[in-house]
Length: 234
Image (tube, rainbow, N blue to C red; front, side, top):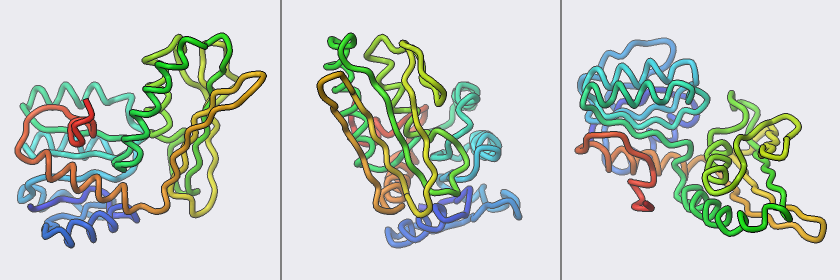
């Protein structure tokens, strides 16, 4: 498989190494200093860039009929626009706020717990915490937002906030600490006890492998997908 890497920072380099180890070829390493020259040779593109570049990367791939997997966060106010473009171009697009197998299982656990706890909303208050390295540009993380949405979907909560939470809001505390790949916690607290579920990433390897697996899975498909489809979690 020929892969275009859109974003060639720390994550892009780990993806490159894993892709080469799995027998794939890199035909484009795109960063702010070069063009999309070589994209036309790709079987699939993997976008791990920055929020300001993601929409251009995704739309360029869809217009070029190149399936695109994106793990860039912080641009989701334009996600529906990319979905419409994918449908208009009869293209292939997969977005994931996190490509780690463990995190995607954690997403499922989070939703299952939210369904259970919805019966006890008058007893337990939900809050969240996420910790990432100091180079992460968006806050809160896309993974934290996905976790919050999973709770909102199965409860009476209506939104999330980084500020002081009202009764219908989930408070997310975002911390930036050197050399932390990603830690996400969901808390249910009451006057008498405290329930916590947590996922701790040790390095970027799990994210990168998941992105490559998603690229392998998506290259012969049409439509809009997520990691739930790749891992058959629906």
